[in-house]
Length: 128
Image (cartoon, rainbow, N blue to C red):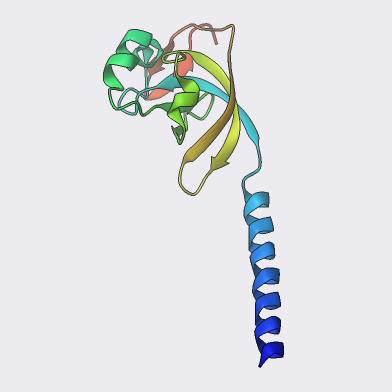
């Protein structure tokens, strides 16, 4: 009976380790640039207005709208972006594409803080 219990425990440990290793591999660190904004202000110049974003994000939830593809990432730990509301930033973190979320590890403000403009349902930066 003890052999069966020990064998079962060993098997559970092996499976648990394999699952943990797979999950760690799935959460690779990525770096993206975009605008820190409120979930309701994801296009046009309003997302680059710190006052507007702070006013709208009363619940503290923020999103990152990436440059280029304009993908909206819900930020799991919005506190990491506190003070960057309405800013153009570079973020390093762990994205979860299935959930559309990102866990922010580091954030750095970019030099280009020109507000994006919406044109023909496509957001582009001024001067590009």
